[in-house]
Length: 500
Image 1 (cartoon, helix red, strand yellow):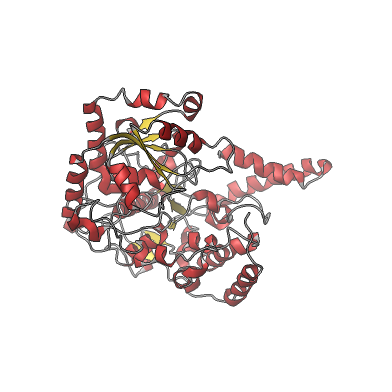
Image 2: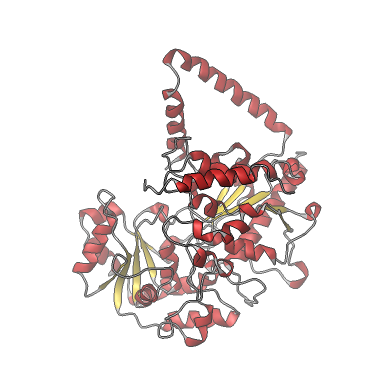
């Protein structure tokens, strides 16, 4: 891990002291095995049998006691099937809130607003103030006059990939189905910026307590609220701006990455919305990464759709990214070398040379000029670049199934092969020329049809501002909120019918 000066650790301690008294009104099997091995390593062999017996007894007690509180949502009962080619149409004017209403908790400012005001301290190397400005959209984009239609340039911003928790909070404040009466609520939103809170402590000489402090503070407060005590948190949800893995630390080892927020006992029933979910967690749903385009009207969307539909594309393929030399057998290096050697049909935007900030003109131009775009893993299995690619009407090429399977199920169609391409990364390592061979099998008409499917669902992964009329279109936020409310309303109905 990178080191910073000791003043950061001192600052964390000072912040904890300041707010401690504030009280406002990889696979699941692998995770389990890792945890058990960690426990076993701290227990002598002659005590292990006794510990196993004790754990078995506790599990039995938990199962018996769980009957006393409302059960958490069952994924088979409450999770809707993944979309095919369409989603539910927006409700009419008489039933806008037919699925229920949302109550927003009023958290201590340290858990959201103060994180924005102290944006210079979020990142140890540079200020994050631009990233969290403008309701999470970031600063207005410049330099796009020759890239996108002139009348659309005001709708483009340099939006950070991890700004979803800010964007959702801003939208929630003016959400048409918000209620100020907790007794009327179907769902309860916790506006805690968990990603920003842990972000400043991910690097440097910080402890696991530093990284967990804000999460523990929030949970200690919310557990005493009346709605929480009624449901044990099973009708509560939170938006996590970072990847799920940043919130799944297994131990309290100070050198281990992230916070254990998701694994804290009080979080066991809470619905999590994150830009990359754990495929083994039925109470976590992935939401689209924010892109740079935030339409102001139905017209904005239609103009953009027509633009990418008629765009002339001179390259077969584009790779945008940088190699990661510290990673052994880095797959990006394979792609980079291959594309640079095949420059007649493969375009490269090397982010170690070109500045690839969020939605940069060089990135957008490259995707607009290509039929396909390669999408290796990002910080996790998924990547913001896949959405930038589809936004430009380019067809994503994946190399790991985890990059698209069981991700973004509320917003993207389940028929992956109708709008994306999968080539196993091991096949590419053995023979990188397979990429061109696979892509050239698609006829011009097949490429056109794949692009048309993408064009049709582009609005579903965009984020507009509050109170914007998108006409017949529904953006990512409204789709998410409809699905959250449907899930919780069905859950409450199920509990009522079965006497929970």
